[in-house]
Structure formats: structure tokens, C-alpha cells
Image (cartoon, rainbow over all chains, first blue to last red; front, side, top):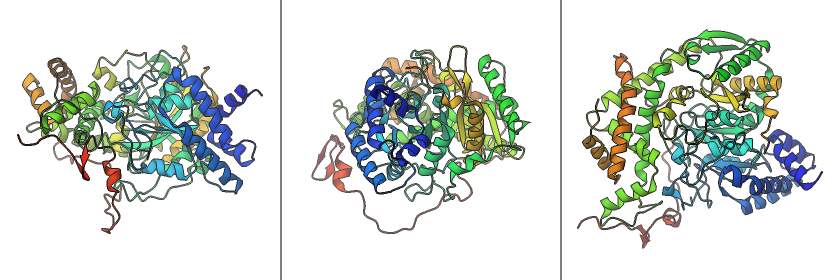
Length: 492
Length: 96
């Protein structure tokens, strides 16, 4: 094989496949890391997945991993090159949240997710692009650049973890970690044809994950297939004394649990998610997927989630209220951008925030501030939080009748740049299938389930019970074994 | 509920955002559209329904042991400050 063919081969492999080669000493972490770094320099100028590439640190870590492997060390990600959404703090490496506000911010500590990945032996290749402060569904709200969908360069990768999903799809990293507040892992995974998992709220520590909406935010893996997602989830999960909302539930060995098959598993099909106006091709592909799952021994059952139509409204009140409070910290005093304008402290605050935040971030801060302000709290935030209870109850009732729930991840495949960005409400409605999961706190994944006639990937969403990521991954694994859809790669 | 230019100005003041006139105008229109959409919540009865503020699972919030630990080093805390002096954050004049 030529060097180019060798690089193409290495960057197409999964974590499991790379681990096999590393342990058999057929390849070194340095070789894999170099293959990824040269693919990034060749391809990323077209894809724009990375905000920062940590070339030197990656090479240094790979060399350390090779020494550890030679000593017989074993850890789940030893020597595996990954990327990290630029929302996780990385000690000594710029962390921007794709915002001018944090353009030059260099954290002094690692997020718990990052610390766990590094301890498990992962080689960090760099930080990936996103919608500013994770607010968006197309990554068009990045202050720095537009990330392209590797399957169709004129289309968005989804968002907000669009850089991570595009990087995994384009073979610019073996896997990535993103965050999901209303679909920000699952929707880009769907639009880029990769696997993305939002774990149960509390499964993964949020320490060092720059806050957007604290009652909804959760970190999770974006990977080439379900097995890799399971390996990543096992590494990042678990109680953390630095996040009081992280749960002390035991972390199962997801990677081995997923292989049991799905015979007898009941899959709930919610009436409310298969409505008029859905993209015909998406509908057909999801129905085919249900057929495949049935063929594998799963039992479809009709269920109802009656408060689904309120989810988008609840989400945009709750998430913006929390965001307006969380983003109050960007005041130009302790870190981040500070305006040169303004003669006193108050004016400095206002100009700093006006200059540092982009349009979508300001819009959400404004909505959140308005709906929390005197006279509106009961009508908006409190009301939304009550309806959130009803949505949570819907899922509890549904899970009495089924073990997982199947829906489309996104109502459409990847859309074109500029198509929705001018109309915030239309963009918000594109999150319609992913939002309820965050409001209820349950886990959910997106797995590739086919392509449209134009060759655009479509994702199948699998929702599960609280802390039952294993059953979701089991279904995802069985499905991808049957269809081999996660083996497809875009031609770049 | 109709949202006025004054409402938007008040929210901008509370949010410490120095918005331009065109931003004020744009946000007034866009917030109105979004608020019209969420208006559908008011048609749903929620009498006696407890609000969910956090999706915390079974164990609820747990507090850590109140023990003495080292805090972040001062130079780390100050390294990103736009302006600092003698170990403190420096800000523009507060009182004229």
C-alpha cells in the first residue's frame, strides 16, 4: 500500500478495529495519529470541522501511548485519536465555544469528560466547531466558520455538535464527544450518517462543559458505530464529585452488553411522531428500519406521547431561561472578551456582551430574560416546567408498554446553508423529534438507517428508559449488524 | 401576549446588552413570533401539576462531604483576565 492508501485505510477503521491492530503491534499509535493529522491537513480546509488542531500534543501523546503499549498497558482508548467539541475545557488548549467571547480563552483545567478520555489513553487531535454556545441546529452559528456536511458539501452538518459529527463522518478522527441539550448530538449524527448518543441526564459529569441549559445539557459520544459509542460511553460515564447532578449508578460494561440480540424487545412506535408533513423519504426509511428490527425478533407496539406537540414550546422557554442565567457570567471581568468601549463598569458590561455574543445567543438571552422577568414568570417559565412534567409522565407511561421507542431523529435530511438560519422559529422546529428526550432526562441515540435518493444520510432515533443506554446500544448494534449501514463512508 | 419595543429595551437592560436600534427592532419581531408559538401552552390545563425543574433521577441531589481542599491557584484564575493587578481582577470605574 502507498502511504496515501495506508492513511485512508487507517482513518476508516473503528476504535475496536484500531485497538486490535495496536495490540497485535501491527500499527503504532504514532502511525494512526500521523494518518489522521495528514488527513486533517488535506481535507479539513474543505470540511472545516476543527476550530483548533492540537498537532504537537497529539504526536507527543501518541508516542507516550506506544511506550505504554510496549510495556503491556491496557486501557479502552489507549492510542486512539479522537476529537473534542470545543465546549469542553481543555487545560492549556484554547476553548472557544465557537464564540468571539471566548476566542482566546485558555482554560487552566480539563473538563471531567476530557480528563477521563485522556486517562483512558485517548489522543486528542483537536477541538471541533459548533454552533456558538451550542445554540443552533446547523453549526451556522459558529463565530468562526461553516462546517460542511461530508456527504454533500453544500449542506449543513447539523448542530450544534456539527464539527464533531462531520469529523467522524469524514474520517478526521476515530470518534468524538459532543453535547446535547435538545438534540445537538443526535441531529448532527443523523445528518452526517454516524452514531450519536445522548446519555441519561446525570450519567456523565458536566464539570468543565461550558453551560448552556444546566437541567438539559448532557455529554455523549459521536462514533462510527454502536460498539465504538459503547466503548466511549463506558469511559466518560460515572459519578463525579465535581458535578452534584452526576449519578452514582454503576457503569456497566456497555461494549460487551450490546451483543445480546433484541429478540422479544418491545419497540414503541409513537403515533404523534409519524405525522403529515414528514419528509416522504425519511418516513419510508424509518418504516423499513422498523421492518428490519421486527425481522430481528423485536415486537413493535403502538404507543402514544400525547404532549409531544408542546415540547418545542417548553424547550425554548426552559432552555432560554437557563441560558440567560448561565451566560450572565460573560461580563468581561474574569475571562473572555472585554470591550474597549464604555466609560464605567456598567457600560463595559453591555458593550462586552454586545460585541462578544452572536445574534442567536443574544436572541436566546433576550427571550430567557424576558420570560423570567417580573410579571411573566408564571405564564412562561413555570407553565413550561409544569408541561415538562406532563411530557416526562408521557414517557413513563409509554415505557410501561415498551423497552425502547423508535422515531426519526430529524424530520428532514441535511438542508442547505442559509435555508433556515434567517428564520429562528423554523430552525427551532427542526428539533421537534429530539427535544422531548432532554426534557424527560432519558437517553437517546441516532443511528444511520439509509440514504435519500440524493445520497443524504437519514438517522433512526432510539430512546430508552433512564439509565438504560445498554438496551438502546443493543438495538443499534443488532440493527447495524443486519444492515451494515455504518460501514458506508462519504467519497471525499 | 404582545411584546413592545419597551419590553425589549427593558429585557436588554436586564441582560446587560447594548443593542443597536436595528437589533431592537429585529428582536421585537422575532420574539413576538416565538412567543406566539409558545402561546399554545396557555391552552393546556396544568392545575395541580408539580413543575419539573431538573430531571434528577432517583437519588436526587447529593451533597459532597464538607471537607477542606486546595482551591485553584491564583495565577490560573487570573491568566485569562482582560486586566489584573496585584492578584486582583481590575475593572473600569464603578462610581463616577
